[in-house]
Amino acid sequence: MEKAVALLRGINVGKAKRVAMADLRALVEGLGYRDARTLLNSGNVVFGLPAKGGGDPARRIEEALATKLGVSAKVLVVSAEELSAAVAGDPFAGVATDPSKYLVTFVSDPSSLAKLRPLADRDWSPDALRLGERVVYTWSVGILESEVIKAMSKALGDGATSRNWATVSKLHAMLGEGPS
Image 1 (cartoon, one colour):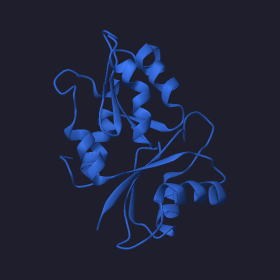
Image 2 (cartoon, rainbow, N blue to C red; image 1 turned 30 degrees about the horizontal axis):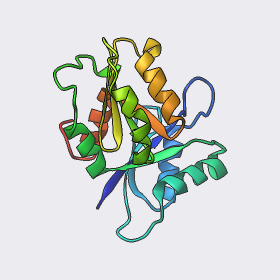
Image 3 (cartoon, rainbow, N blue to C red; image 1 turned 90 degrees about the vertical axis):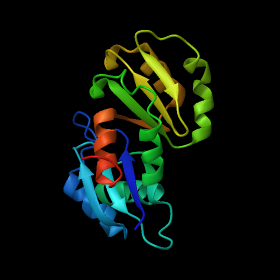
């Protein structure tokens, strides 16, 4: 069975857009996806794709969130292969010493990465930004104060969502692609 990860943008941050993970798992499985498992309380769902058809999972989950749970949130779905490629492409191995300060930003449209080329050419020391195939890697000594993360977020808008390296690694393991 092919697996994927749904990354929900901006849920359970503060008091807005609250979604219980049990409800999220039930919603995903109710759409015909199999073996839904969540990680943390921030909208990460690993699930199995049906052998045939099933439509666009990101669109289907996004619509079901709105109609069944009353929550409007962007959903980005990453295949197991794409997540493995993001992990394998880690440009900061050995440099990013704190996985909570190392972000991987997944984009819904890989062509949007072109907006970041000028940012990738700049020196953001002590922070850093590198472009991958469908992701942006950012290493920062302080995420909330990081000028590179602010610039990246402004350029990408809501067509992207970030997870720290610890979360990416755990999702990779949940997919059976990496160490747990």
